[in-house]
Length: 290
Image 1 (cartoon, rainbow, N blue to C red):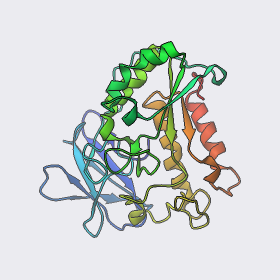
Image 2 (cartoon, rainbow, N blue to C red):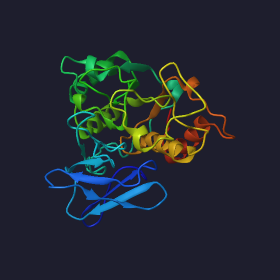
Image 3 (spheres, one colour):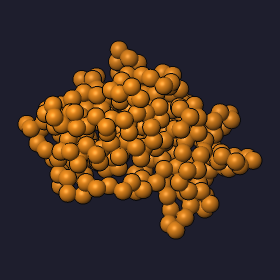
Image 4 (tube, rainbow, N blue to C red):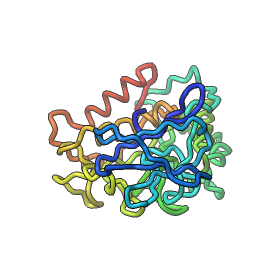
């Protein structure tokens, strides 16, 4: 994944961010006395390898004016959207669904689920305890309402601001992966609800260092949409496409439900929805993604 941090071999972490609106970016590691200056490649990317960082390392990215912001591709925000990001090992989960191939869309009996409201605990782990009830009901696919990190403890999920980080109020990423694995063991697919038509207003720091992220050509009832077809659109499209690939690859998702896709306005020769669908199906060609 080109966005976010990457574990290195045999140790260390490469931190990177696409911030074309910032001349300099710094990295503040938890426990460090001062931020570290990141290396600018001159094409909007800033990167720094830290040999002694690893899974569990907490960090902020620091703007030129000193504002600390989370990684826009953070895999986990233990203290919500204003807190530090945490380095996650994407390969740490012990999956047991090696032979899972999914089911066809025509066989799907879909159950829309809000993780925070489905059980009294409102956790990824607590959903697992209820999967047999859904199985007995005849459910063959769960649609998880948007879990991309949003401000606060409870939210419908449609004003998320950190699309790569499963919201911490429901549990850790490993626990969400455990839910998907448990669902597959019971023959139940998991579809992730994603919101690519706009970003929420609260705690949305991205425009401060990536001013071309939002479209200057279009609008939606919820605010400015991502820039799919204007100047600087290439990295915006990749940021969104890789988020879709992320849910399929790292979380073994069986499909995506795109919120308000009619408001994903794109006048490019190739619409973002066509490109996204092709890239997802190419990644998951051995499975039946819906």
